[in-house]
Length: 178
Image (cartoon, rainbow, N blue to C red; front, side):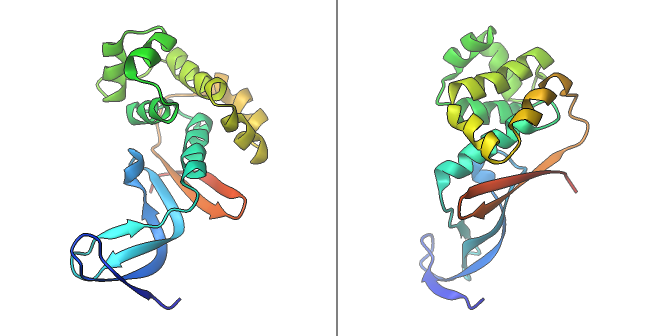
């Protein structure tokens, strides 16, 4: 694909658009990869800016993939789901039946999440945002995700979340991290 010339927003240098995979750390998670998206790359400062189509569906898909994750949620994943749902730490902690300091320790990785709290976070996400259930159904994952809730095990293998954009929205694949 021929690169298009652009100007870098950061340094004003020459930039061009390329298509490639992108680690989406802006999500607050370090294991999310967007496959084959347009990236504006600066020749001068080497900065990269992704062009993200359908941002709302992207964030919804990340939330769905976290609910679908076969292992216990990590703290940053709990924080992502809380923020995705638009909840503050006090109200979210109340919904979970824990105090705010407990939630803070979980989100910061100082304390592992209990299996019961993990399942409750996932269930709250599905109940709080019905579009997550619709997305799971559209992807054909709804019944499997609900069935597997009781089988979620400890996080023994780091997971990479790879998201692909299509005309009808994002899809995801959960893979063992390399």
